[in-house]
Length: 302
Image 1: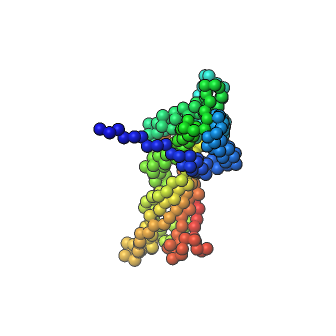
Image 2: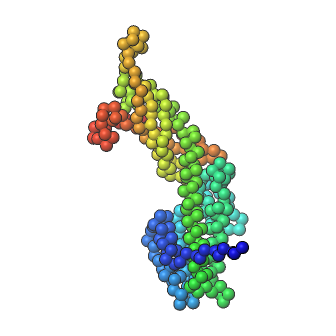
Image 3: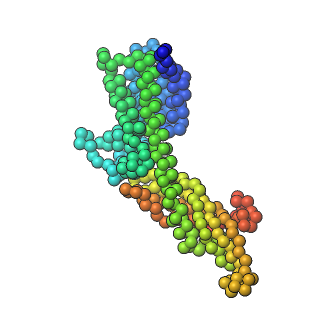
């Protein structure tokens, strides 16, 4: 049997494109742009005898910048899961990476309920950072010229940083999936227990039958809570006439549904604790034959 050769590593143009995509998507600030541009230029200079070392120094500072800006000391220390490491007084890289990935969510919840494993998003970053640290200190036995070694280093740290950021997205997607299992109940309770003018005005007696949250956006995943923006549909029965009218056969009713928006705070702990929805707004414009963006759009906030 003929051995299948491993695919060649991506060329510099492909790697640079990957770094540009990372910068635009995850850390598009002036510092990142300058450091990354300078680091890649020196890395691709095959004539520079320590090009790899200079690239490593640049990207190490860039990685530190990302970790510190996205995971500030104060925020990380406020997390229930934070424990001061014995061998340092500072917040560790692993702790910062954990905060970027899941903020205040407990690791037991992240791994047990959401199914995200540390080795998938923290360990690769720590390994890549260790390589950068080693390469940054130029010694006779650590010189890295531009070439295959630098190429591999650029690919490894890009993969590690991108993996961490993608883990953060994956975590938030998993949280949303979990929330969809239970979030309809507090929204329905709110709509049933409060008088919503935009619904109440539509009939003699408007009965809220069901509420469905169709979209959940995490506005902020913080140290001890999540702030959510919700969009959904409320299903109602519009009853015309009093109870006596119905008994005489003079009443009428119809079913209808309307979009709503709301905000919701969720407490972070061993499990997620749903609060009470706020700023619930029902859009009843379809009842009047109006477009949702019409200036005459009828809405009311609970």
